[in-house]
Amino acid sequence: MKRRPFVIALATSVVAPAPALAAGDKVADLGDAQRWLDRLRTAGEPRSTGAWPLGSVLEHLAQSIEMSIDGFPQPKGALFQQTVGSAAFAFFRWRGRMSHGLDEPIPGAPALTAGPAWQPAAARLQAAIQRFEQHRGPLRPHFAYGALSKPEFALAHTFHIANHQDEIRLA
Image (cartoon, rainbow, N blue to C red; front, side, top):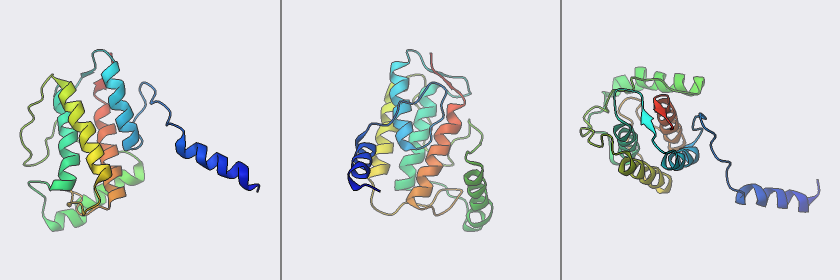
């Protein structure tokens, strides 16, 4: 292999911006989630088709990410986390996506207050993702899955956002 073309290709792949997320595409990582939030801002009138208004959905997603750093208020017991919870995460990981009740709040989390004013909640979610990506300390156990590594938590957050995308429509 010639070294120069390889170095140029490597540098280009690191520096080149990620492609835009096409309409209807599910997020595949937290970078996609940031690009998806950018799309929401330019989409005109995005909306939720589920039980919660868009602002509440985005606030819920932000809570989940924040709690992976700060701690979940009502974790399931260790036995649940080590059996049912870890099995559920392993299944979602194997399947490549999660599914859960999209109107189920995080146990013990503060009540969702964002309502239809979705822009502040989108900014909160974007800040939560950035905080998570920059966080270098230990993470707190997930309330159901238990202890996860940072890459596993990133995957769980990505799956969570992608699952909630099922109920979000761009105008």
